[in-house]
Amino acid sequence: MTRSKTAVVTGANKGIGREIARRLATMGFKVWLGARNAERGTVAARELRSEGLDVQWLELDVTQDESVAAAARIVEAEGPCLDVLVNNAGIAINYELPPSQQHLADVRATYDVNVFGPIRVTQAFLPLLLAAPAARIVMVSSSTGSIGRALDSGNQSVNLMGYGSSKTALNAITVAFARELAPQGIKINAAAPGYTATDLNGFRGHRTVQQAAEIVIHLATLDADGPNAGYFNDDGPLPW
Image (cartoon, rainbow, N blue to C red):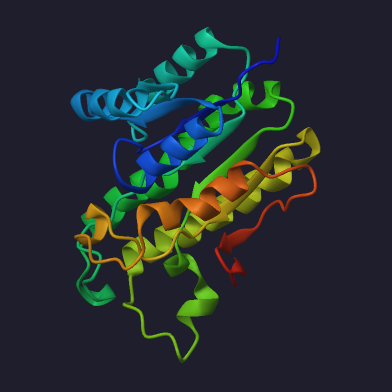
């Protein structure tokens, strides 16, 4: 009997994460919808199951060691391995303030979710990922994490020190894990979904969550010839 592939998506009760979970489930994955809030997580999972999709809420606070460890134990109890991990959970606090005015506490909180969270989650689920025949990990980054774009004189985007630098750090983490795990057949890439209308930006983004999910789904389902240790948006590789 063919084994159903499994996926964990963090921060998946709404926005881009929920759409990623939905898309993977429509492709036949059993999806663990990671969310720290029980009510929001269970409602999101129930709504997706009403569409005939195999989606279960997974209590998962990426900032808490025990929460992440407990989530990994739950997934392990349900199956022998994990095929896809999407580190999607992210926050942006007062992100439009100029660097000279950003509060250090806000930057620390941003890094706790956007940087330390993916490290914590990846390490906790790594035994299950290694048990899969060809696991894929996607770090949901941002084009604001590109130092190359930030230095481009034609780039007029807001100078997002806290949020942007957290995504720059996430890109470096992507490469570090990818270098280590490539010999084991795991491919790890960073995805930049674009300026998407979500509550992260007060729904001011010009892209839909459906559009944003495309690059993540592509990287989560790469074949053996696909890239590793890369940084991509819909148009292709981004400058680091």
